[in-house]
Length: 478
Image 1: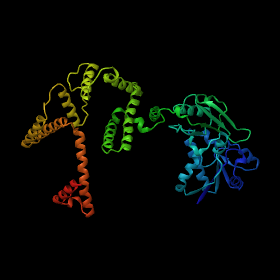
Image 2 (image 1 turned 90 degrees about the vertical axis):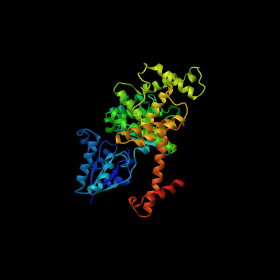
Image 3 (image 1 turned 120 degrees about the horizontal axis):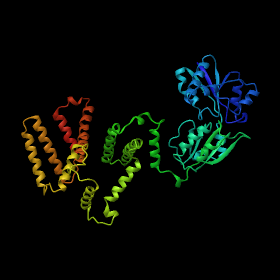
Image 4 (image 1 turned 180 degrees about the vertical axis):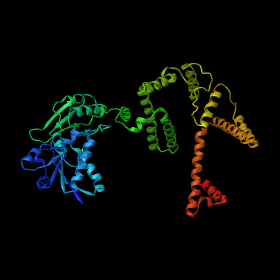
């Protein structure tokens, strides 16, 4: 089986290279360097160590991913003829994409990858900045867009090769940190005579003219009083997901395509509430909030409105419709609040053609019926006592049983359901909630029938109706 031994050149000169690595480099095996732009390479040349580097690929390829893929491919091909050594800056296991790919594809290529440990750039960096990683640390690849860093700990942005990359990372960081937040720019950490550290405001990062391949950024933890609101982070993430380098799925969505998810998330919130699972309820509320933010992002992109407009509108509406809280008027009880609410709504827009205008037709049938009946009740079209709705339910049931064809039965069943919803208003029970609880109860009891059949090693269809009914009645007693 072919073999590639991967070694790290350490962060600086030969003094920071492990003895094992130095001896392997002098073993006479063919050596490949990811890049010869490293402080120790000239010292290796002086000692007669020869190598081939992949620096030409950085000029020939369009992206870093293309460069890394080509390097890995050439290494696998070279390993077919002989054992080779692949040397990378720092530690092979720290911020080294080519090594990650080699390890991932090794089994497929029938090649063994032998990785030898070495010092990374992180060790001298910790020393020169006085950082203890045990207190928390984030390591970020400087060659890719930065998303949602943990601003409560130190963040190290590695491989910031030039001013252009520094400018890109500056813009990313300014989404999460104040523009004038002081960060450390470090070059050649631990290399005697060459180490450079400068503390600069974030907005000045790309003005430094000495940024090179040995540069990294060290971002201190934010003071707690400066933590950006999580709300701002959410909006920033949504903006990035929809951006040019964002998520392909998110970029394809429209108001219409998101409609099913808005409905689905709403019902999942209700389900969590029914289950009295507050952890799940919190999570599902977050999913529902995401739908609101997503639609607002789409609207902003179309220059229709922004999330700020959404928030501003509901703030103004809440204040306007609660004069008993914000404007010095009074409301004796919750019923008076609702009466005032409806009166205020009437003044907010032109007079509707019907009292039912504004009721969402996309509501479930039970909710839609309840809303319609409530509207009619507000103008006096309602029973005086509960006797009316009860009598109406009995009347509609008789008419359903007397119906002679499908069309008539469908109509009478609708009338019966409408009457039952009306009754639910009088007893102050939400019909949607009541029916869902009953369905849940039915499923729970039917599970016992399924479990009984399974224990008896029988199919459900093999149980007689009498057997299932017996199990059902026992389930009702539990």
